[in-house]
Picture 1 (cartoon, rainbow, N blue to C red):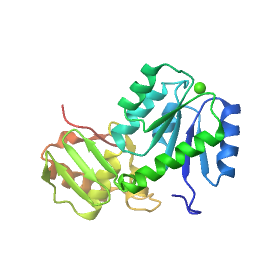
Picture 2: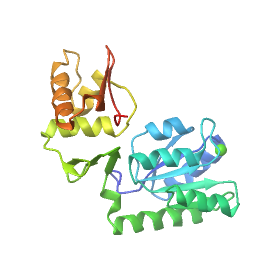
Picture 3: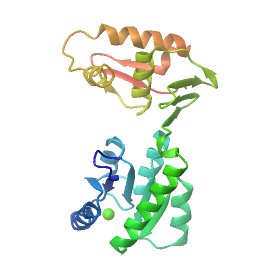
Amino acid sequence: MSDNGGVDVLLVEDDDAIASSLATGLTSAGMSVRRVSNGTDAVAAKVPDIYLLDVGLPDFDGFEVCRRIRQLHQTPIIMLTARNEEIDRVFGLEIGADDYVTKPFGLRELIARIRAVSRRLTNSETIHSAAITVGGLALDADARRATLDGVSLDLTAKEFDLLLYLASQPGIVHRRNDIMEAVWETNWYGPTKTLDAHVAAIRKKLGNAKWIEAIRSVGFRLEAPQ
Ligand code: CA
């Protein structure tokens, strides 16, 4: 939930007219709305309370966005689709969407769906369980527990934070300064030897250095070893 207690909505919609009218409507219903217009930005955006995800996007379609988000976390997703075929609905739910609304839809209907999905997930408490898995690695952000192939990893607090940060976007190269800012919560312009030491320690605990690849003079990338 956002600071004012409203639902924090990430609207993923490439059509400016639809996006702006939806944003206005949802805002007046007490929700806070951020908007992106393509799939890449949707996956990279700060995680909201709920995603409203258009299917027809310029880079890759909403189903693919849904699939990628689901690899990272279980935040509720409502698909906004112009396609009315039953096959899409089934497919959408199969890949992990929580609900879908077919265009054209009324604002009132959409708000009701958002509230229903938020309520359902709050009740089952899954909205707070931020579990991330990459290959055999599983991280529970709330319990601050990490396991590899089901075996508990004994990590320090900073090692856990660093691993969580890298694992939240597997395959993506993270710049050293970005990692320092995110994990050590500081603007960092000095040497980043601390970071190397932590990476070395984590690699050792994971038992395979290939988990975290160093990209020379850029940063690090986490991926399950082949
Ligand atoms: Ca569209």
